Image (cartoon, rainbow, N blue to C red):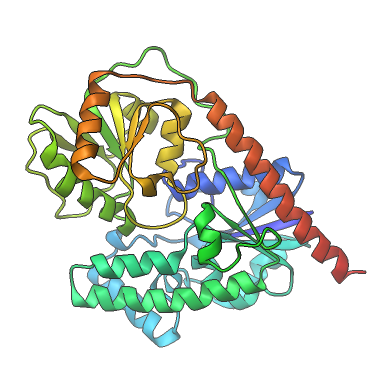
Length: 390
């Protein structure tokens, strides 16, 4: 079975974000199941595709809103309003339909499409209808947009997010209806998308790399807690704001917290132990240098890849209930609470008594369940393909 995996940004091997980690895990699982996978999409500027022989590149673009000039942002908004597309999808309309169709032809004969997330599928939706498809919903995007609207600091942002939510709900419903099968990354997302039946969807448990993390000797603890993420992504920003504003004030003054990753302007903390360190060369080494990992998701849908990585590494953690979306097994060294004061107390207790565990069993269970779900989806897609040519 030859599948065309249609995505906004093709893998470049860097695995710099949760989205890229999830894509790598899903593509690897499809190939383990015996499918030939060709990826189609854009590259980041200056970052070539990691697997050029199995990738069709539409061009190089930077769709990150925080990197764009004010003029570019206004152009995207105007184009979205005129086209009726979402703001997220219109940024991908950097090439015309004809160029995408030509790229699809270059991929050769395919048996079906894997439409990876709503952004790319929504931008070129009409071009992927002549073959059966699987839709991969990384999040319930319209619910995330509604949460972003509630948290928006300006009327303009609030209106824009409300528009996104309205349009995304329609597109997600249409993509789910047209798809032969839907993959989500969290159990509750199946019901939220209206595909809770086992005949229509399955959850994909994820892992964070092709190989299990290998300990690099005893851990050297350089700080009490460490957080890393793309904080410019609004759901992540909401969680970070909650942590800094609600949890951190309950921590003792000497508690040391390091925050790594892309940081939007205006993020600060009066706590003397909080340090913003920007990008770090080795994300795994960074988190392993902390006594405990705060898992702070309070918004969004889908799965939290940082939670999965923490559990794979066996690191102590304190998690909100939202951080455990899509995860059935919680290790013994993870404390769960949504109360800010209790969260702070649990962080201090974990940092004072560091207890790592073996994360290999967690990873094995994730891979086994991931492969089973992928096989189910391919069976559904294959049955449609056989019916079409019967």
